[in-house]
Length: 139
Ligand code: CA
Image 1 (cartoon, rainbow, N blue to C red):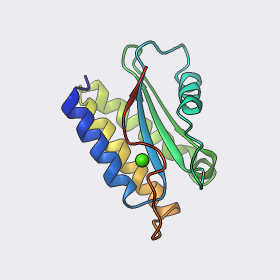
Image 2 (tube, rainbow, N blue to C red; image 1 turned 45 degrees about the vertical axis):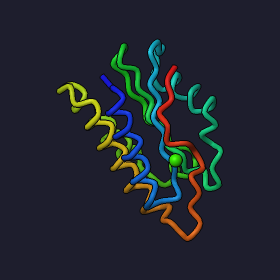
Image 3 (cartoon, rainbow, N blue to C red; image 1 turned 90 degrees about the horizontal axis):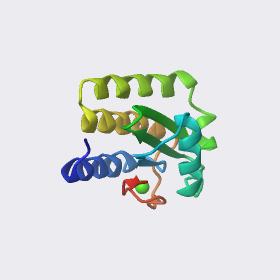
Image 4 (cartoon, rainbow, N blue to C red; image 1 turned 90 degrees about the vertical axis):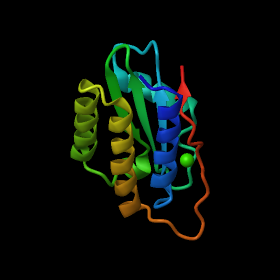
């Protein structure tokens, strides 16, 4: 579903989104998953050290295609500022794209939306280190 080219495009989408914000976005692909995608996502969130940002503004897109599961987890810095409806809407749009088989497009669109939201609350100043790798992780 996500081939090498798609991964490259997703990394690029993350890179572009992060140019406009100090926030950080990561994507994780899980093969096995669990009953509750949010619980699984939280485990990955911790494992990846997603809280390792100065402003606590990391966002993880957790995906398990085998179980058709999506979870979007924002660290406390961003979670406190963004209403639940934003995460719900992003989730819904991605899920609709996946139903049409548009996996790469759905992920990139979500990255774009999250990046825009992050940029409103965490705009870039001159110091914008890449605090979390843009590489897609898999387990
Ligand atoms: Ca990054």
